[in-house]
Image (cartoon, rainbow over all chains, first blue to last red; front, side, top):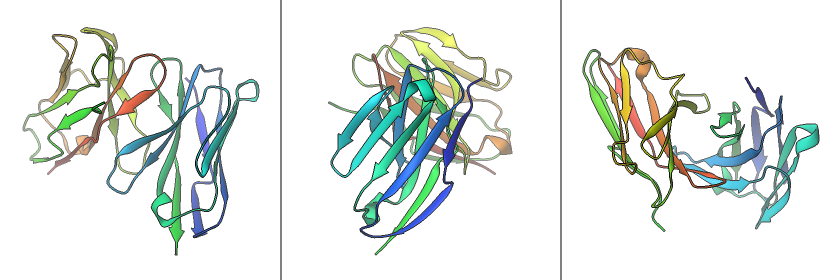
Length: 106
Length: 111
């Protein structure tokens, strides 16, 4: 089956810093999503991005499908950005990575 | 547009008891998924429905787990009997086209 690896596993930032999260996957996919799981466990859709680049406020994402990776950029981080960020890939069902745990301190 | 609804939000039971979870997907979404998320891991698919038919239940422990989506809208997931290792968050998601959208989940604790 498809393998999904995320890095780094943990990230600690001070408010205002920028960060890049990476997702590598082992096979071709036609669905890639980034989620933020907040401290209450809710999975919040950030991007549906099987290819190309998208931006939403302080967040942007780029997927290079031919090279089987995706990047999530967080700029000017805020304490509310804390939580776990998951990349998930697949053709129909989603295969989730192990996540990046982000902690942003004031 | 209302999101995916799930209930209950929390459930505590003793091992060997039974439990049921309910999910109402986003209106018009034909595809419905149940995922299990164990603490510290990403969600893993249990079962996928397309309308009221099962598309993929290969990861569902069928000796104790069952799920149905009788009218092609809402769905129930049942565990009978529960084991300690079933303690997890059970997430329902729905899709109509591209992205999957997740509900708030049901946190199950088996004692």
